[in-house]
Length: 211
Image 1: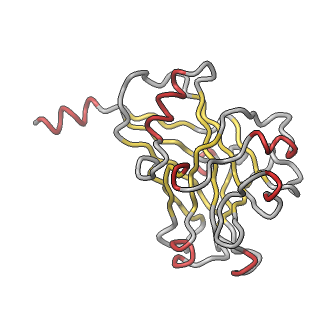
Image 2: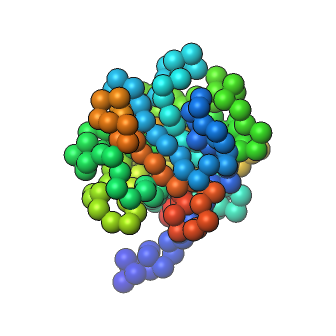
C-alpha cells in the first residue's frame, strides 16, 4: 500500500531541448542539422582546450527548466537519444567507448552560434564532469536507442540541476561526448543521434525527470 501511494505521488516530466548544436569545425549548420555526430580522439572524449578541439565532434543540448518543481528532489534523471540504424560500431565497441553526458556551461543558444565561441563553452573533462554514460544493447533495428542515467556519474547532476533551477536562465546544458574513435574503427564508427530538428518528435533527445 505504501509503495502504491509513493508511486502515485511521483511526478514525471519529459523535456526536449530548446537548443542543440553539432559542435565540429566542419559542421555546415551547427544549429540546424538533423543529427548530432559524436566521436573522440586517442581515448579522449573531450578536448583539453579549444586549441585541441579540431578533431573532436560533440553534441550540445540545452533544456529549459521553467515549470519544473523547485525544491523537489530528483528520484530519477535519464537522457534518452536515438541513433540512426546500421551504425558503424558494434555493441562491444560501444560498451568500451560509450556515449557520455557531461557538464557544460549554459551560455549558448542555437541561433547565431559559431565555432569560434567554443573556448567559452567547453564540456568539463574527467570524471568530475561526467553525469553518466550509456551504450546500446543492440545495433539491430530501424533506430538504436541509447539511455543515460544522469545520476550514476560522478559529475553531480542532481546538484547541477538544483543550481540551474535557481539560476536566472532556469536552464541546464549537457554535452554529448565519446572516446569512440573513427580513425581507429572506420569512418562510420561514430554516434549519430537525432537532434531537435528532426521532424519525428519521438526521435528527438529527451530529458526524463522523476520527482
